[in-house]
Length: 607
Image 1 (spheres, rainbow, N blue to C red):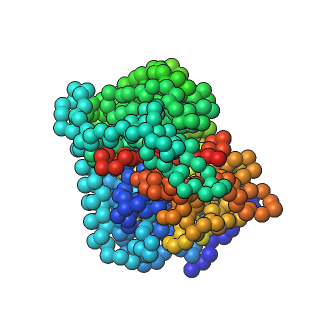
Image 2: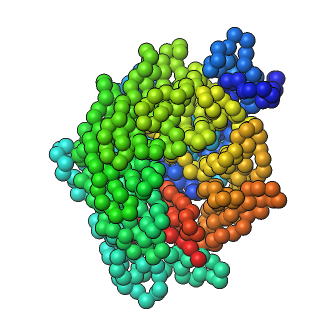
Image 3: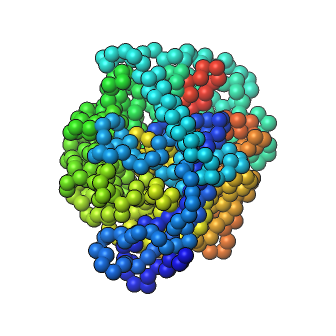
């Protein structure tokens, strides 16, 4: 089998997306944090585990004779991982090819096929020693898919209840968790009711703290949630305030002491989407349901000022054409533009005033908007020709204020755009379900400038995008300047973070976790990469600083979390994490609704 050529010396052509093979893994029965998950997180906000083994993608290939500019050649017959006998992936969820359509009825972006676990950006984490499930019986895939759908179906039924669509919500199954009693333990302040005021909690997460270890500065217990669970999406850290959404409320805590920054903001129905980004002046937009029945839509928008908790403008998002609903939506912010993605279209608003700017609808004969990634740029993913011979995905950069298309890149048939790793530079991850391959490409002006060419098993933390693509639902992926940082998968023991050049697609350097637990990149901080090391059963997590320049990349420990908080730190169903101004913030993105234990919502660590 021939090897692919290296990157061309001149201006890059448009090579086809290339990829390696991923091994999907079984979600383990229990666990939390960045370790084994209890069950697949609900769509939109979960952060799954480390995927399985994925040999690296192919290097770029030159433009083939007769190829048109912007068109990817094929077939994919060359390269060290171009073919081979593999059985169907074992799990989880509906990882089959996209349904014929366009999209078909129902919520989300046409129930698209999911990237198989084991690829970077795919959900699912194995328990230790689970091995390569491509070698397992295909029948297990059906069991896992049905189980995942039953969990999701059960959650929707239980959370929404059976009442009418009249704005009145059913009472949650879970009862009050009980207020904590004052204690002389000296533990972090927490009210026990999610409001952040009064008393000390009897749980002293700093108990037994050793010299040199960081402290839990404060922590908060989660509010009541239905017995089937509820979403707790988003976490926004400003200069003085840490803000967290949970079920039907938005909470704000002082970053230094955890005391309430403003009264909780309550919504009539459960929160169903949030903007992952905040604006330059610290504002976000929250979407909540129109009612509590199965017919309710995720179409109520509310702007919130993170500094004060004051509500700004509100708006109701209209449904689109046939099969283009707001049963679920995705929100993103680019500059002063809010983009709301429906199942087959998008609507842009001025994020300051709520004024509608434009709609993005079907274009050409068969192309439908299927997802948006915001931030420094606004990038649209479109799905074209569903179920036909010309079926393919397209990337388009949009002018955020007008919706005008700046450039378009057309993927070849069989490739599905799954995740946005960055929008500045534009770095996207795609999968080929038929070939069991994946690809990470960097784009400029509608052309691929490089593709990741590292034969490695990457393991970012990504959500379960079942009802929508959830393009920006990954943690453990950092892009800074010309470098992409990705964590590797480790079946046992320590893993590594690999620095990859976005100019060449080649590995720059890698560093191994100093502990036997895995680590993931969190953010770039000047000349250093901030990384988080998972807790173990007998030690808290760690926050590391890794120099990214020359002269070595030896990690320096910024925080060693106390062992007394390890169970909480390691027990979240799924997590959101951040490092801001010398403090490490950790929050759950999914409430279990279990009233037998005092569920934690958010923690802050520091010196």
